[in-house]
Image 1 (cartoon, rainbow, N blue to C red):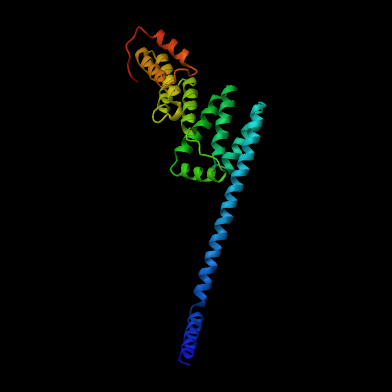
Image 2: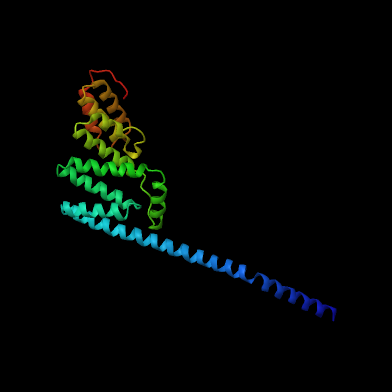
Length: 233
């Protein structure tokens, strides 16, 4: 009998506790479920957002292969406007810059490449882009910024801005170390600094594998400068 009364007392205490605490319990549960479903909805939205950007870029790339410059420009503008938080915006800008160079529009190319460089160097951008690309099952491309800086340096040099071009070639070259060094050599040579040019070409050659494409051209450039002492640039 005592056990029976004790059990009833425990049940009554439990009921009292539930009466006094049902609201925070239910509220906490509701908030927890909302957070779970909200997070899933947000992830789904981001995935769809990246998918939309991917489709725009594929259309852009197809238009570029057909030489439709105006269409490429319009889609690149849309990527920048609506999808700048995805890697497709920068990739579209690079593709447009390439077409602009081919069409002699160096100012347009420089503007697009400057946008990519400034965007990729902005604090926090890399983390956001990497997280978004991860949702698409892809790997973030660490070579995007070095490639953009290399192309920008090439354009700036064509625009007769060698100092600005050399500035873009400073810092981490990523997988483009040989091309960075070779371009520095070309610019130094155009400025009449043959010793610095030879040093840059030697650096470029050292960065290449024995059977890499481009070794023959670098070796010829070095042979043409065999009469000068090396100065590391």
